[in-house]
Length: 169
Ligand SMILES: [Zn+2]
Image (cartoon, rainbow, N blue to C red; front, side, top):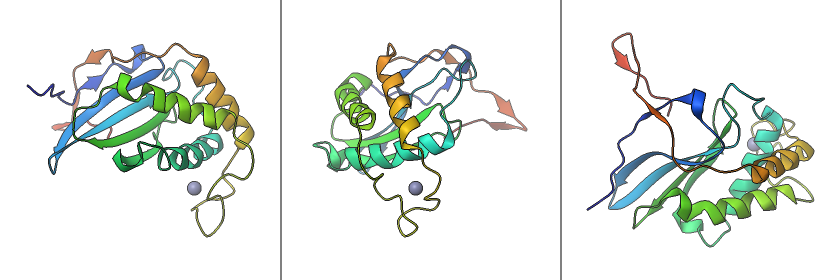
């Protein structure tokens, strides 16, 4: 029996750092899972600075797409609220947060210890190559690794506005 997880609204006032399943879709015979890699407590502590988040996007995406998991990576990128990143995977079996915990810890350890040029931070490869901050990105990665990670979201009902149901992704 597939452990189908319906897309649900999350109570953002109770979110702690960790890895969560945001939604799961069946696409072309594979499970496409959208994970929230939540680095910060929304609205309760400072979000990641846009420059640092942009650097995390480049460095972690490069790490994941060169990892043993590369052929299962669909997408890695920052959340608009800057409290974390989306990680979308495509797998034969359903993938749970604990299944990618080691991979994500490895990616953030790589970020925390990163030396050298930020990959792709050039006018040719990036839409805003001056919007980077490697030093703060490393501190944010260290901070995330030092937190106690959770793996299940506190749920709330989806709200409706103007006759439409709200989704944030
Ligand atoms: Zn960029």
